[in-house]
Amino acid sequence: MARQLTFDLPARTALGREEFFVSPANATAVAMIENWANWPSHKLALIGPSGAGKTHLAHVWAELSGAVIVPARSLPTLDIPTLARGNIVIEDAPVIAGNPQAEVALFHLHNMALAEGHSLLMTAHIAPSRWGLVLPDLKSRVEGTSAVIVESPDDQLLSAVLMKLFTDRQLSPTPDTIPYLVRHIDRSFDMARRVVAALDDAALEKGREINRNLAAEVVGGLIG
Image (cartoon, rainbow, N blue to C red; front, top):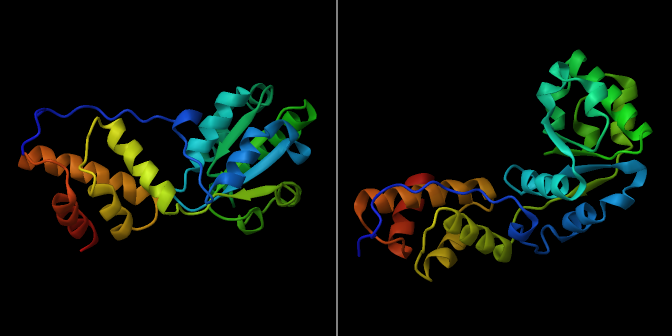
C-alpha cells in the first residue's frame, strides 16, 4: 500500500523530559539529573556510549536548571567569566585532552562556576580517569567528579525510542515493524536513528508502507 504523503516531511527532534523514556538502562542517570540540586560538589559526569541518550539528558537538565550547553572543543573561544555566571553543560568533554588552551579554559570555568554556587555537567563516552587530561589541576578536579553511566538501551527502551523516532517523522509503521527492528539492529540510538531515516527514504522512494518486510530489506542493506 502506497503512502498517501509523497513529499518529505521534516523530522522534529524532541529533546524535552516528556520525550525521554526511562528504563532500567538509564533510570539511575535520570534520577541523578532530576536530583541535580544535590550533586556532590555541584558537578556530575554523564558517561555512556555513543547514542545512549547523553545529549538528550543534557538538554533535559538544561531545561530544568537553565544551563547553557557548549561543545568542549569550543572552550578556547568562549568568554569563560561570563559563561561561569550560571549552570553549564560541557558536551564531549574528553575531546579537549592534550589541547592546552581548552584544558586551561575548562579548569577556570570549573573553578569559577562552582565558586559561585553554580553546577557543571560534563558528558563523555568514557570515565573521567580515562580522558587523558594533561593539566594536573584539571585532571584532579575532573577525576574527583561523581559519575553516572547511561547504559546501551534495553529492549523496552529501544522500542520506545524507535517509536519516538517514527513519530518525529510523522510515520506510522505496522505493529510488527518495531519488534523486528529491536531483534535485528545494533543496540544503540545511533543505529535506531539511521534505520528509521533509511526506512523513511525507502518508503517514499518505493511507495510502500513501513512494515516488517521493508524493515528487513533496509536492515539488510545497512548491515550488509
